[in-house]
Length: 240
Length: 240
DNA sequence: CAGTGGTCTAGACCACTAC
DNA sequence: TAGTGGTCTAGACCACTGT
Image 1 (cartoon, rainbow over the protein chains, first blue to last red):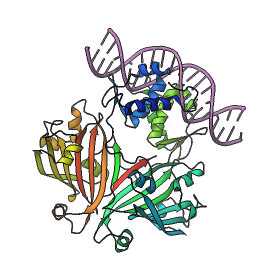
Image 2 (image 1 turned 180 degrees about the vertical axis):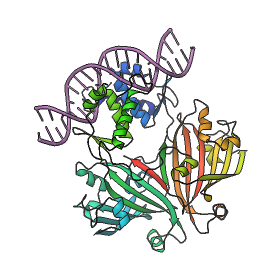
Image 3 (image 1 turned 90 degrees about the vertical axis):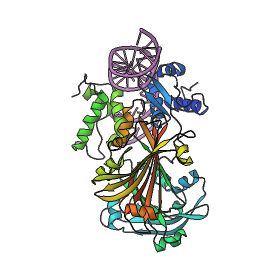
Image 4 (image 1 turned 45 degrees about the vertical axis):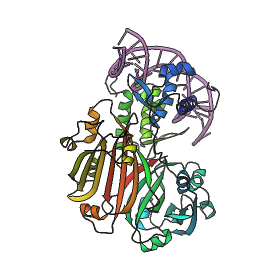
C-alpha cells in the first residue's frame, strides 16, 4: 500500500491515501475514519506516524477529532479561498480569469518615511518601486504599487518582473518567504485612479496593503493595491 | 523545572517556559534556541515531547526551524491582527475603543433564498434575524445583521443577545465553533445606511459577510456587516 | 566531521465516550 | 468495559548544514 523506501515520507503517503478515499466518497461527511490503531495495522507503521498524518489533515480542516469518540470527515468548504500568500496572477487564475498587466513605472528611489519604516530601512536606503496596471480578461482590475528594498534584490530588472517575483526572491537561498500582514479598507476613487481603472466618479475602491516577511522576520516587500470594487471581492478563511 | 504530575501536559509547560525566556530577551531575535537534544536533557523528557512543543511554537510564528542549522527566534509581528474568530465587542476592545450597540430589530422569519442556501436550510425553515447598530466610543461604526437558524438556537431571546452569542452556542455541548469564511467588498453607501452610520453621500463603506461553521461543518450563523470606511480597517495575517 | 532538524518505531498509561 | 484520541518514552537512521 505504501512505499517504505520512497523519498516521500510515510506520513505524507498516508495523508494522500486518506485524502483520496475521502474524495472518492468512501468516508462520507461526518463519518468516522478508521481509528489510529486500525490505521497503524493497515499501513504497518507506528501509531505516531499515523498521528502525524491525521494531525496534518485535521489542521488543514479535512478531518476533526473528538476525544474518546474518533476522527471524522469534516464538511468540505463551500467557497475555497485562495490559501496562503499568492500573487495577483495566481489569484486571477484561481478565479477563472485571464490575468495580464501593463508596467507603467519602474524606478529606484528613496522611499517616503512610512514606507521606509514599514520595510525597516535605514536613512538613505533605496527601494525599487514597480507600478503596474493589472487586468483580468482584458479589463482593468487593479492598480498595484510594489516596494522592494534594493539591498535584498539588487539584481532586479524589468525582465524579472515578467516571471514570478516570489520565485525570483527564493532562488537566493536563505531567503524564504514566511508570512504577510494585510490591511484592507474601502475608499472613494481618486480622479487619477478612475482613469486607470476606467470607472466613473464617484465609485468605491478596495485598498489592500500587504507587507510580506521572510521567515526570519525581515520585511521584503510592500504591495499597495487599489481594486475596482465592482469586480473584486476578497475571500478569506478564519480559524479558531 | 517542570511538574511531571501536573494536569498540564509537559509539552505545554515547555512551550510556556520557552515563551517566557524569549519574552525576557534571553534569546534575541534571530538567535538559536538550544537544540532539541539539549532541551531533552534540560527538561528530562523525550525528544518527541520537546518536538511537540517546538512544532506548536513554530506554527504560531514565534520560532522557525532550519534543517541542519537549528531553531531560531522569529521577529515579533509589528501589527498584531485579531487572530481567530472574534466578536465585534472583542474586536473593538482590542483596538482600544469602547463598544456599545443598539438593537434595532429582532425577529423570527423565513429567510431569502441565498441566506437559506448558505445556511443549508430546507424549505420553510426559519431563522432569527438580529439587526444592530454597533458603536465605538459612542460613534456609529457598523450596521450588523446576524442570521441564526432557529433549529440550532431555539431558545434565543433578546436577553441572550447582551452576553456573548458564541458562548451561548457553545454551552450546548457537541456544538463547538470551528471556522468561518469571510467575504469582503467595498461599495457606496445607500441613502438608508448613511442615516444609520451618520455619514455623507457619497461615501465608501466596507461590507464584510461572515459565515461561521461548527467543527462538524454545519453552518450556524451569517453576519452581514456594513462598516464606515473612514473609521474601520481590517487587518489579517497570511501564512504560507 | 560533529551537530541539527526530519522521520520513524514499538511500546506505555491516561481521560474520555459509549454501551 | 472496550475503544478512542492525548500524552509520553527511549531509542534509531536519515539528509542537511557548517567547519
